[in-house]
Image 1 (tube, rainbow, N blue to C red):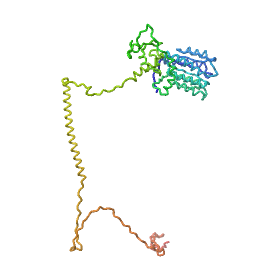
Image 2 (tube, rainbow, N blue to C red):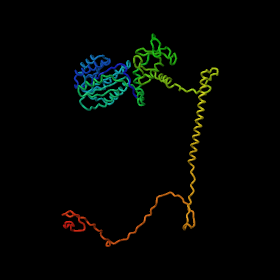
Image 3 (tube, rainbow, N blue to C red):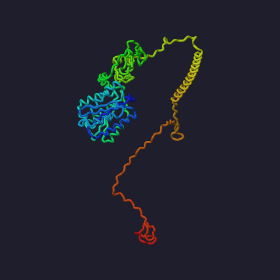
Image 4 (cartoon, rainbow, N blue to C red):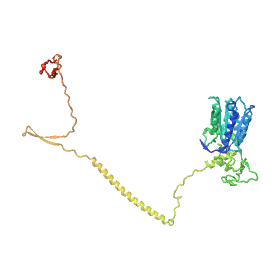
Length: 459
């Protein structure tokens, strides 16, 4: 997980010229770098440097320059004698990273490296792996590497290597195909880069950091003893005796660069939250020099400060712990409060009893209604009807009428048997007499071939 923080210290920009062709002319290159430095100083004051190799494989370098004059002079004098047959990108980055590691021991800057390259590197894989190892270590010293590949080709053999180098340091990889594009890319790099500090590394990162601990321990410097004329007061706690341990054996030491004084406990506690990835390697709070303190002592302070704390156990309020006041010490306001509390409880009890009785009555009424609804009425007695058999003077009998539910009436289908009739016995259907009209007079004619009106023959 990463967190974005503000820039620490000032920026130092270092140009590495690794150009073997004349795709960009010397005069144009000098003008573009001069404009870049001038525009950069308008935003914030920075320092500048340059590295360029010569034909004898030796680099020419210049660092910590405040303006463009010295940088442009190096290009003017050494550009024509640069090697034109191979790339020295790994050698140049080795030189620049060595300077960054050495400089980071004294001051904490943001180091930005701008590489101008137009030829693929032909170095072996082992050479590249050694460079990659140093690049990973340089991330803890706020190093950002931007690479501008100046080429007319779409593909090149070291594309993956260059992208790995730039991405590991939060930099960029730019492809330039013409002079105008080169000017735009340089202008985009004027803006300050932001630093990303590792707050909580993953398990894989922790193993990697342990392997590199010896490298950072060699870069860092131990605290030194005080001089006889130095005042024995810690600059963190402002006391002569350490307030954390209270031991006179906790001697005060100071930074080798600025002379800031620290107790061992005070600087160890400061290092726990202000380190570069290892708890015992930190930067001086005043001059930002890289310091190293006793790792075991820091671990001891860390355990006592953060891991050795006893958990807070809540105290149970038993009768033994509660101290009851005497009756004579009860104030009148407390007595009034108790009387009001008793009155409220009495009113609440009365209300609760009345509401309970009301709920009980409602429950009884509901149960009674349910019981009444569940009782079915007795069935009605059957009706008796008296009839006489054989007339008025016949025998009288009683007939009980029982109502039955009406159901659907079942209709019994009757089967009809048809006799077989011979076809010879069937008679053709009679034709209806047709009504015709006379063509002469238009009179209607039926059952006749002559018109009854004009006598014309009906056809």
